[in-house]
Image (cartoon, rainbow, N blue to C red; front, side, top):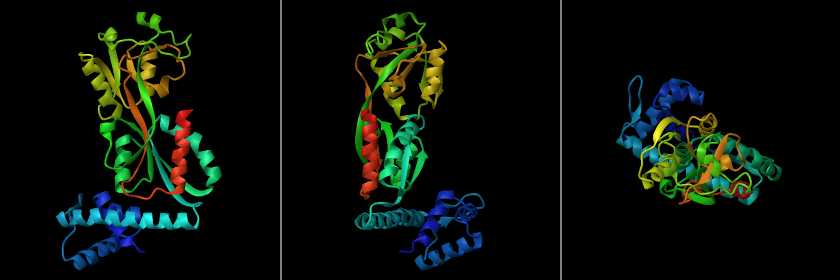
Length: 303
């Protein structure tokens, strides 16, 4: 099934520029333009609004692009199903995971996966949750591993892996740290109402992050607006600033499962939690290899 022309048109749309698209496809700009003109002549309508710096699809172009992506997905799924019938030991698998914790999961899982599927080429992709969701929906990513609230799911498939609680973290030099008994009770963090630190500064994850929605709700339910010292894309940054006695923070369990010097942690009375999940495109075929990778990820999170 030759889908080169479809791939060419999708690349023009992706780059919003025919010259850049030609460079990414390793063909000349006139050759790519000829492919587009031939298709537009066949369809009898223009697919892109042209300008020197911006090529964007016409209404007809949007329809073509939507169905072109579906055609590529059908081709991909067809080959996957047949490949699984003939031999599930060969192929490609693109895997998405979030920055920070994601690479630790991948490094733990991949050696076991490679042992069973040595001839499957795995492409790791470190991406934010929203970028993973977009890549899954567009068919650019086979499976993704992410953390999110239930209302942040798209229409694609989600496989629950674990529930993860969010904890309050404060500097060890804070007077309330005397209530932290976790170091003597095997990380059984005691409860502390967040209003106890309502006058302290907080460093929070940036507004576009999936955890921020949950964090904002925690403050809303506690009926106060936090004094936000700083916003960041890194949980490690928040922990470093707490250690420096600069702020408090709300941290997923993964990052504080082991005691951290200079930080005391507490459970919130409502025990807020979000989901760790695997995702793949709606109505697409999940190969045996992808299923096995997800199984290994589940085992990793259980441990």
